[in-house]
Amino acid sequence: MGSTVLQLLLLLAAGAAWAADDRQVYTCNATQLLSPELVAEIRSYAPVVQNIIDYVLRGPERNRTYEELAKFVDRFGARISGSRNLENAIDYMVELLGRQELDRVYTERVAVPHWVRGNESAWIVRPRMQKLNMLGLGGSVGTSPSGITAPILVVRSFEELQSNASKARGKVVVFDEEFVSYGRTVEYRENGAAAAERVGAVAALVRSVTPFSIGSPHTGWMNYQRGEPRIPCASITVEDAQLLRRLQDRGIEVHVHLIMDAQNLPLTTSRNTIAELKGTTMPDEVVLVSGHLDSWDVGQGAMDDGGGAFISWRALALLRRLGLRPRRTLRALLWTGEEEGVWGGRAYYERHGAQPEARRLLNLVMESDLGTFRPLGLRLAATDTRARCMVAQVLRLFGSINATQLTLGPDGPDIQPWVDAGVPGASLDTANKEYFYFHHTDGDSMTVEDPTNLDLCTALWAASAFVFADLSERLPRP
Image 1 (spheres, rainbow, N blue to C red):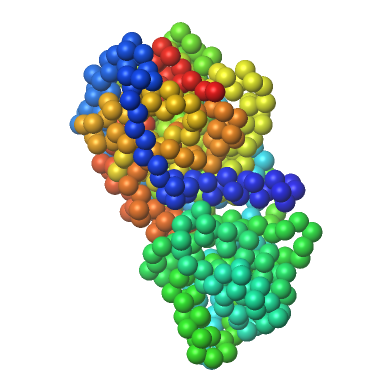
Image 2 (image 1 turned 60 degrees about the vertical axis):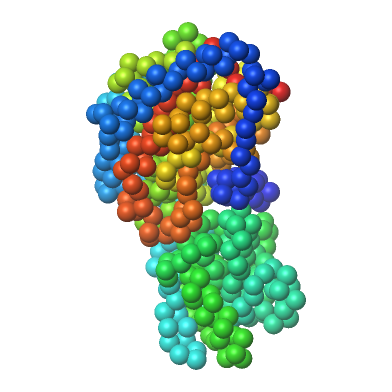
């Protein structure tokens, strides 16, 4: 795959974080934008929405999303693309979904990268010995078996690196960039190695992309420039990056020793996992709910994105148990290969989105990939003012769980191709201040998840998807 396309995919993968960077709360005057009949129809769903909420929060579905997710992540743990563990997890999901009495469960093959971490370590070896907590970045090449020992050059930005380019040759460049926002700061993780190599560095270490740290490195995918030499690259903790900078500022020469056994193996085959609840009168039209099933190779992938995947399939399962079947088909899609550059999302769009009719029939695409914390409402990517107002009116039905907020802006990474083609897109908006504390770390485990918050997210996800799929009027688009 060409570097330009890969860079686009990496931008899309980072796009799930835009919601935390660009928040525009939306309100509308429904009497000016929507017909009285449509407003009345939306309001008529209040008893159905409350029934779903009660069924999840106080009925037989209480805590079930948490319990199902815990069983899943405790059994399979990390699920990186290309691994046998991910494919075993997909087999498990196909079998589990088959027991939910849905109308259709199937998979679609997707080519995905296969990067293997291997053994790795980083040490300060001069002026004293100290282990550096590190995680190799996905896609990185490895070192030689004996590793790399070299002095360091610490910089805070790409501009500072360029200003000190003459000092970088033969060194390990350490990026001690400040966290501004994920969308802006992640460029150091993605492009730091390429920038360091161009000034002659032998390796790069990048401060973890997080606003808070307790000594935990954060991994993630990185990018090389096509046709340029490749140097190893790893993330280190905020604490260690700051330590190395302080030592340099005092005039102390620091040497590090880095060993990485990382390998980039040939592309392999994975699968998107899909389940459907067929619509009653407009079955060819679809509302899609989704989250990604793959994760990084550290932690359990409970927050990123087990929770999003599980509220998506659970939405269909609990609606079926309630006997609620909307006019349009509801489709749950559990993406694969998201972490390496939305491979599952791109493959799905390339397979199904080429024809205008296919895009027309997809009424709304929804994705949860920013954590399943306490829900605030939805985030919407749609340019039509009537579509925005319709979604805002639907969210007014969720006052009992305080999830009525509509924000505007870019949406989830796997659904972004559909949004770019004009299909309205929505994502779960939650009180996720702590999301990037655990993102891509060993700390992404069931300990992050809360049973009540998962129930609230499940109820919002299921009930809103039902209303959008059942309304007589589809969401308009330009």
